[in-house]
Length: 248
Ligand code: HEC
Image (cartoon, rainbow, N blue to C red; front, side, top):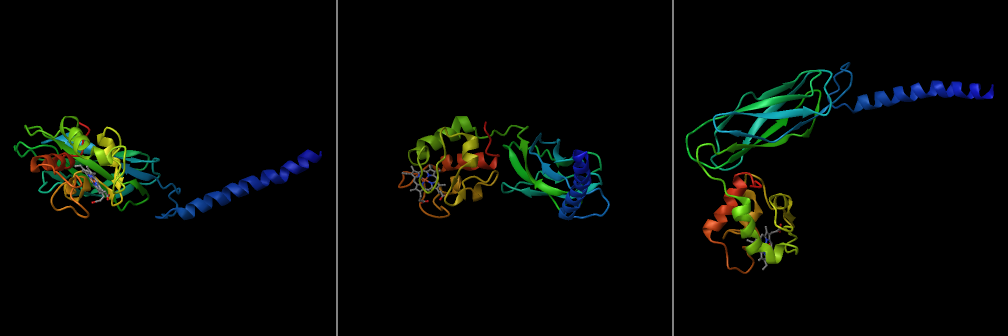
């Protein structure tokens, strides 16, 4: 008899707590479109690769299928200087209610110029009924008409380990330890006191390249104290970064 009297108030209290919890999370919804059911999925866009002359499709995925239509803005940032072989299909995208992914298409021109890989960045922003978890992706155009990419394993890896290893591999100078190998992924993730050493697709703002030139952005030219890399060697590091800092 006593047990039953105790369970009744608890049974009433629990739904009350749940209702309070729901209205709390509803208040956190930044877009706050009333009556939409209150789910606010987070959008992420993934890297993509395509040949010249093809359509490059970036997949935009939601953390959960939205209960009302989600729209967002799409834009392209050119990375390597002079890059212009691509056109955005549409500057806005839609993820319809009930679907958890959609695509943003970019048309890649075929300019019949033999060139190496070219990279650009797709950015999605300003979503309605959603937030952005990862709004940036890299698009890489593969060299379908003859241009050759700088190979990491064939060129850059040995260059860096021979010329930089004594001070930056398994040891730290300027806050920078490039890690064993080095590997392409390790270099992409490596940072010194002045931040990341690679900005993928942008050698002009990558310290891994700029510090090897005769106009380093700060401090000394590398390798510290010389002798220095030849211009051809500097350009191999530059081109590898501009072509996407691939593990190739
Ligand atoms: C003899 C030792 C030595 C060698 C070899 C050397 N470095 Fe350095 N490196 C340093 C020192 C010391 C600093 C800090 C002073 C400065 O930035 O000028 C530094 C700093 C740097 C930084 C800046 C890190 C930051 O965020 O502040 C980069 C990038 C870098 N080195 C790249 C290289 C590359 C690329 C090579 C090979 C081509 C190389 N270094 C070879 C000694 C060396």
